[in-house]
Length: 335
Image (cartoon, rainbow, N blue to C red; front, side, top):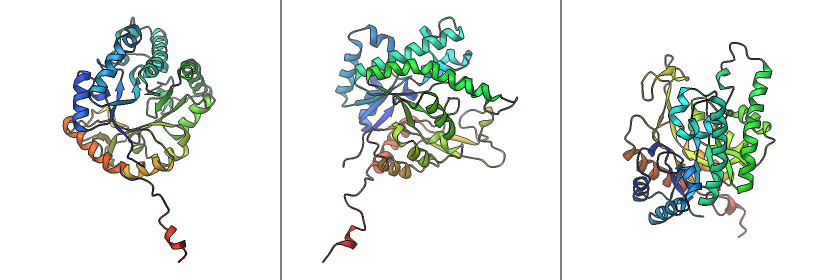
């Protein structure tokens, strides 16, 4: 059994031209890209409107020996269920923000997610990774007191907005892999279970497994991967480190990344507290055969150092493969 492919998620590289990201990733030895619908990396509207757009992307990828297993539309997905405010204007394409009317933004974001499924199919990727947004995340502290029906309406809103999107995913033969993450409809174990229940466990909706968001919540990410093993459609590896010292809190204290007063931070892969060997072993156990995508985030390390370092670490980990026979098989061999 050969090592699984290792790809680079381009979301944190969207300030660079796509051709430059291809050159960097290929030069470092990545097998492919998880392409973000950001910058000039992938424009959903142009991909559908311009006949030469996607062929040119494929040619560029082929020239650098890079494959694409998944595309990401995290930023637009965030707007599907969210309470829309000035934060969204900074992350959304102008055509989706338009006049900023909240319901209009949500509707245009949903239409873009449908088109993202069509673009993924045309590009040959069978997974779209992303966020869902949430109309009830602001109630997470449960104060002022939150009536149960408010939470129910939140999950119904998610189902009402995402089921039509998932209908298009089904039609295109593409799956959506939601990244379980604070600020989303599914941000931990029980909310993931509830989100799946809300949409009737339909197969078009699965998970993008990223352990970094579990660590600072004190969640068992290995157990999560096992329990939701039939829904792990894609994997991002990103590291995190806790600094919960009695003053630094896990909610971040409204402090910027890398501020030493934060209770946790994202760091380059292998420099934090995630048990990535355990992650690889559990992925082997659940027969996940897709790529591992490096999502590089570290406010204290240059990405040109972090990205190749992360690749080397993942390559060493993916060499861990199940043996062809149990280690104790020899004990039962008859002489």
